[in-house]
Image 1 (cartoon, rainbow, N blue to C red):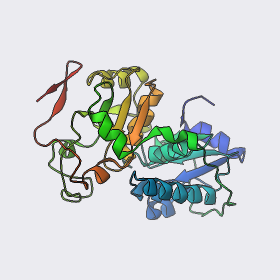
Image 2 (cartoon, one colour):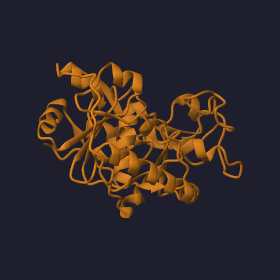
Image 3 (cartoon, rainbow, N blue to C red):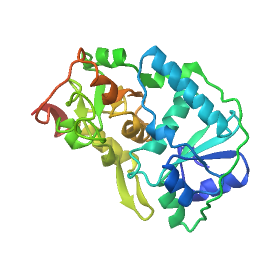
Length: 295
C-alpha cells in the first residue's frame, strides 16, 4: 500500500479482502443500483449537500456527516475508500467525501484513483447487492477543522497577496456568464472573488488507459506555476459548493503544496450576500507566463 491518498483498483481489492475497509460510493442512487463495487455503501449526499460557513452551518455539517459516516460503518479503526464514476465525470464528488473525512479528523481515508471506471477496466466485479453495515460511533477531531476556510477568512484573504485565492470553476462561471453548474441564474450574482486566480479543475487530470486520472506531481506543479503558485504558497480554493475544489485539493496536496484549504461554502454562499465584494466581466486575472495579470 502506498502513502498516497490515491489507491489503485488492485490495492482496493486486496484491502477489501481484509475486512478492514468501508467502501463508499458517492454516485446517484440509480447508478449505484445498476452496479457498484461489492460491499460499497451509497452516500450520494456527499455530493449534494450544500453547506454554509456560519457556526450554525458548520455544526449542522458536522452532525450530518458524522451520522452518515457512522451509519456507513466508520468508527475510526476502518479505512474509508471513496469513489465516483471517474475523476472527471462526478465534479470531484469522491474527493469531496475525502475532504469531509479529513476535515472531521478521520484517521484513514483514501480515494479510488480513476473511480469505478478504473475498477471495471481491470475486469474487477460489480454487484447490485445492498450491504447492511454495522453502524458505529464516528469520531470527530476538532483540530482538523483548520482545513476549512469560512466566509470571513476568505474575505480577509482577498486583501492578503501572500494567499492565492484559486477559483477552479468552469470558464462560464469564472467570466460571469453563469452563476453555477445548476443553471445560469441559480445564484443571485455572477462573477468571482476579487484578486482570485483561475485554473479549471479538470486541468489537474489527463486521460489514461483507465480513464481520467490525476497528472504527475511535476505536471500539477506546472499548472500551478501558471498562476504563480509554488509548493510554499498558501492556497485557498473555491468553486460552487466545494466538490471541484476538493478535487483540486487532492491534486495539490499530492503534488506537495504544503498549505491548501477550501472555502467550502464557495460561490453558493458568497454570491448570496450582497455585502460581499465580487469582480465581474472579462477574464479578470488570467495566467500569462507564470504570472497573473489583469485582462
